[in-house]
Length: 159
Image 1 (spheres, rainbow, N blue to C red):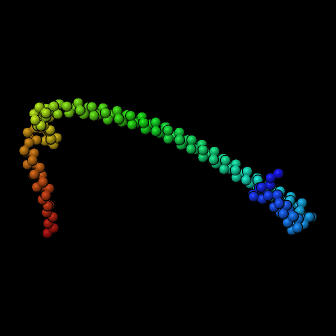
Image 2 (cartoon, helix red, strand yellow; image 1 turned 60 degrees about the horizontal axis):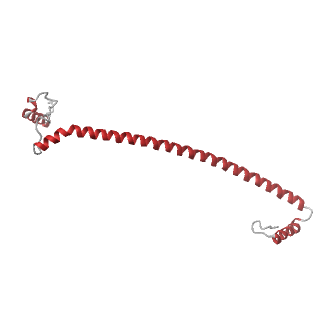
Image 3 (cartoon, rainbow, N blue to C red; image 1 turned 180 degrees about the horizontal axis):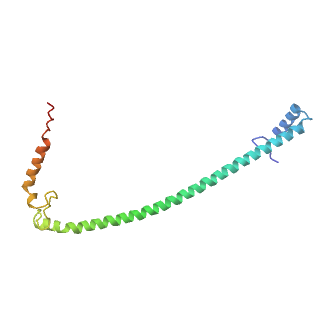
C-alpha cells in the first residue's frame, strides 16, 4: 500500500499520528478526528461548488464563443457577397466608361491628339443659357462682377 500523498510516506503518517496522540491526548483524539473529517467534508463541498460554478461559467463562455464564431461566419459570407456585387458593379462601370469614351479616343487617334467638335460638344454655361453669351462677353461680365465685389461700401453719413 502506497501512502505517498503530498510526498508523505508511511513512516511520516505514523509520526503524525503519534504526535497527535501526544499533543491532543487519547481522550480528545476521536473528537478531533470528527472535527477534521467535518472540515474535510466542508472543504470538499466548497471545492465542488467552485468547480460547478466554474463549469457553468465555462459552458456559458463556450456557448458565447460559438455564437460569436457563427456571427463571424455569417458576416464573412455577407462580405463575400457584397465584394462580389461591388466587383461586378465596378466592372460594369468600367465597361460602360470604355464604351462611352471609345468614340472620343478613336477621334483623337484619327486627328493626331486633338478632338473634333463633332464628338465633344461645346459646353454651355448654365448661367447665360445660350452659345453667344457663353463666349468672350461672359468673361467681361465676370470681370465686371469682380470689380463690383472688390469695391468697398461707403459708410452712411450721420451729419
